[in-house]
Image (tube, rainbow, N blue to C red):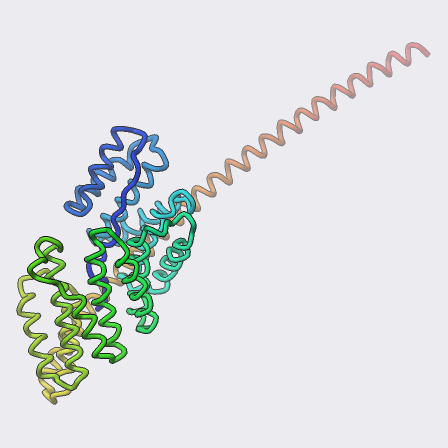
Length: 378
């Protein structure tokens, strides 16, 4: 898997009431619409953010919604833009919870762009903040989300041992949480812990975790979003196919893989699961010495990966340009302030010098008058 699974489900927060009623109404509506209609929530939050004389809380709430909905709409550049603006104004003491959430979303976004080092920087900051006295021990959901994201970061870095330890931390936090979304997140944690165990070739433990990740289909319609259920079950089946491949049963593995492709024929394509399927089909056919099918699925896999990498590279290049433009604007602002400071300083000292010159001239004039008076008295 190359990207996080339904990670946009992870971060939903709430804020206190704002001071300005009109803005408060807009932001409250945007907050409620984040899950059902992220595009409209984004529009409302942008409307609120563009208003003048916002309080600190209103600005931060607007930026959080803009960051979160951009994440849901898969607009990584907007996530980074609004997320970093939020971090600029967030205070470690007063806004610690919101800051942790935003750091998590930014870390997830950089991971989707395959910028692992950048990812770890943000997630390490979030984990450090979790130990702050401002983060209540009751906020299990927030803590679980950060541990989950760190686990995924190590998972993608192929450090499955550390990934598993963080998945365990995340699961423990989710088990303590009363948030209804914790049920979804714990299923995701078990799923990806299972994939981490597959990396370590611990197939028995991996299968146990995949079973824990499965969803009771009778309860599914009431407790889980349909899209999540379908995708979760597909990934569980993919995990089982990987286990069969490790157990030298490529034929049985292929049966599962083709069934997943058949079921997903009319679903929205996802690079992570489809690419994994084609890669595993290629390996399985090679193990079966079916060179023709091996080459075919290998070529499909490489083509799809190349397209994904090209799309990621394009986004990274846009990010570089965006950051360069922001840096230029910041530099321009600094230069403008520097010039204004020089002008102010020069004006200030000029006034002082002129004042001193006037004072000196007057003193000299007084001395001359006194000299004349003294000369007359001689």
